[in-house]
Length: 411
Image (cartoon, rainbow, N blue to C red; front, side, top):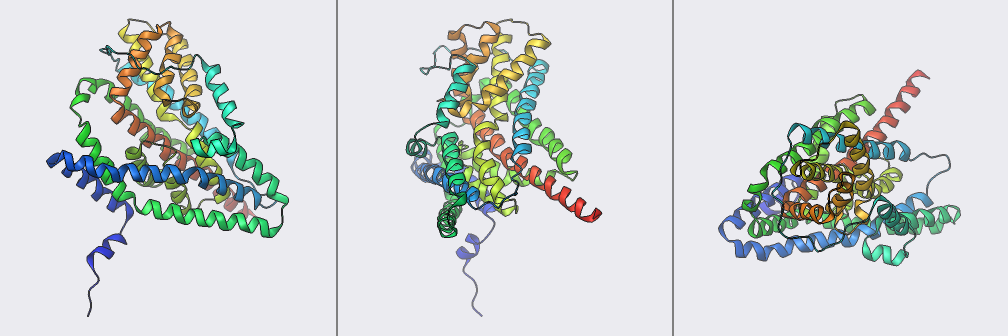
């Protein structure tokens, strides 16, 4: 009797187990041969680039096709999902305030300033978001402006809603074709993660982070509370069922990939594939996942809040309860606009520092500290943001299913 070859059997195994093997292999090669690890880093760069390349067109085609083919009277559960996104981001900011008060951080400010310019205020952040909505569609696709992509996809989908069945079918077929490409790219995740881990360990290691261990502990502790306590409570409130199987699955299948790619945009295809695996409504997740990559920013809110309060504590500024609540609101609103600002959440720290009269040159030194710890901070932030997109989408969809089942049983 012929035995099955080992390699095909491995390739047909669990994607998560393959990714874990890739992580272990990356750490090993970085430990014993840093030069080789930097060379295989090309695999990671290619994987992230492939995800970033396919994500914009996937979102555009999938959203347009979903809206164009939506049946009259069909609901997409977007309102409760957006509510969860906004509430979750605010809850993350409040959690970061509490953690910062319990474990105050004193920074050794960097001696160099970041060379990038922060936004001048919340109005600048909101203005960027508004202009992204009316961006040229071709430029939106090329630059990965998902707010603009969503706006044009929704407009095109509405316009095609009354088109012929043949035209709608063309869009559906294109959507299926793009989805097939996405599935192929995701199968390459173990190789991509292997390259990313190897190059990261070879280039940075964790020695440079030792001096910022307390700051990292507050940041990561806040994110862990959101991921393992707050998010499960929200899911339990929405569904009335044990939330941890869903939470752990999303952290495992979305969070791990996002941690190493450090890009919410690159993780959109991964999240859509996970939503399909969870049997969620495609008309819902095709819109909620790219939208979540823009406005569901719990990790960013934590980063902004913790680093701002660390700067205030370092300068001996006393923060009262009212100001802390105001900071939470500012951080949550700013975090929702983080993707529209070059540099992400770190460049919104000076905006929050303005609440306490902290000079811009000091605030930019805090930003520089953020860049130093970015290898961990940004990875954990992206993992929390991206996995929560799926968690909240699934919670809203399952809540609707449970309500429909209950109404059916009573009838």
